[in-house]
Length: 119
Length: 112
Image 1: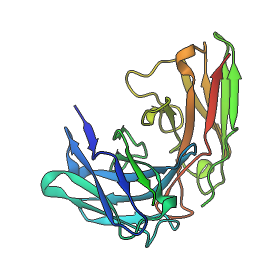
Image 2: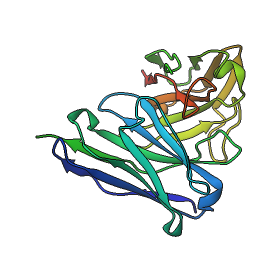
Image 3: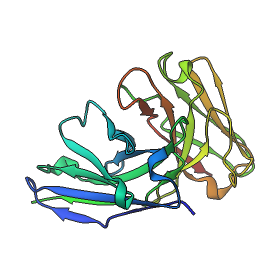
Image 4: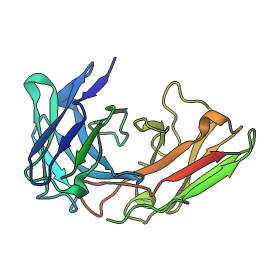
């Protein structure tokens, strides 16, 4: 069974750093793209960026380029989304999702990680 | 990259059919057969219900169907049921901008 399990909710202050994770199981981590999606409170879904862990190939949305870092550790089938300096506007639910290389469908999704940034 | 355009809300009575549109450009919806649709129940993660314009994943009800004409894709829900009340998002591959995918603005479906 394919599963994406994300790390738990976080409460941070503005200016703090954060790294959240998404651990995959039940599939070949190296043959799927992994993407990160932001959902701000009461809003829609936005692509932040996608990565092909097998080649460390990463594509960021212009809105998020330079604001976050997407990375992965193939040895433990885990992807990460990282901020160097959080802002209140980063408060959102963040989802990871996967798509098999060569397809365009994001088959499986993590349960989401709620990040709250407040002073 | 601007989001694909969906109606903000669509409603229908149980048993009726409703259709949600998703309008883009020739760089996304019109240029690729890569439109997928996602259902997001309240407080839950999105779930794919249609992929490659009109294909249903295993286990998804055949009351959901997808189509495309030009730069507009559509999701139809037939025999509307209370459990269909959710937010629905289209998604398309795009050559316009990285990361090469774009979501629609989302549609809230209400079952009257």
